[in-house]
Length: 389
Image: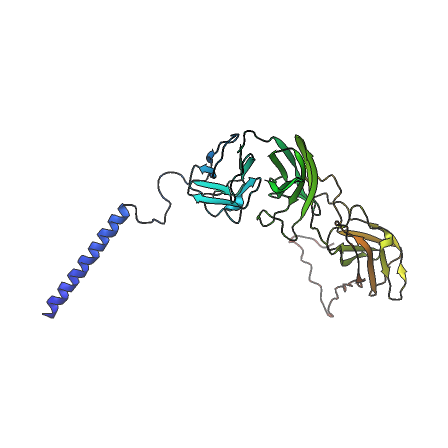
């Protein structure tokens, strides 16, 4: 009796497993199962998403869209590789509230939070960094221009954005332009990989143009981010270079003093020095412990760095952070000196005095190698067949 019941129970278990296997096979045949391998159907996609349509079309006038549609040839990622959010990949110029971007698989709709205003020319830009689901990323942007009024504005402000203190261009920086008569309207653009920017389709007027090193890609100026401003009177087109730097309000502090040799000191400051008020020997004092001053022969910048090559360089000289001080007599070894930098002006015009101590180290004496007593030199082994001399 027990054996028959056990046999019946085993048979029912086998039957249940067979039913489950058949059901799973049917689901997989219908495409409900995920396969861990590379899906069949051709070569792996290695191309970045391509734009197949933008609405409204560029150059349109008299349109009042609720949003701008960018349509792609494939599904794009909601999490771009080149920006913290999807909205950060788009610029709407002029700005009318925060940019909002919505993902619709193969389309992205973009609009300003407060909507498009009447009688205004808009430039909507997709920045580089959009990727597909396989991680293929666009390294180029795209732009569409349209007007909610009857005509398109045709003004243009172009130039290059530099990090002045570091002597390099700023890629993906933010450019803002505000009219003096309408400070609420802000036109926007981004610098490209060469630091070049172009504010297109801007109406004539007097503009306050600001270039920002938008380090966190939030389309705003944050503390400690380099920036620069310039006034542009625009009639048709204008060119301007922006030399961004950190606007430090505490002044340039002497952060360290290094001994290059007994008559040469290297002074390092924590932010760039003024290019219009250069430091002279009268501003530097080197005092010995007995309160006597070491004479200063010259104060100059370090030799130019020839390893940096820019296709375009700022028209103004790159500001210094380092000064080379030549002394009139050698410093004594193992003696503490006080170095004082007085009335040093930084790029924002703030004047500061600071000082540091420095000690000339004694030279390191490397002892000569001493042979231990009783050392026997190794025997000289001559090759076979060598005769004695």
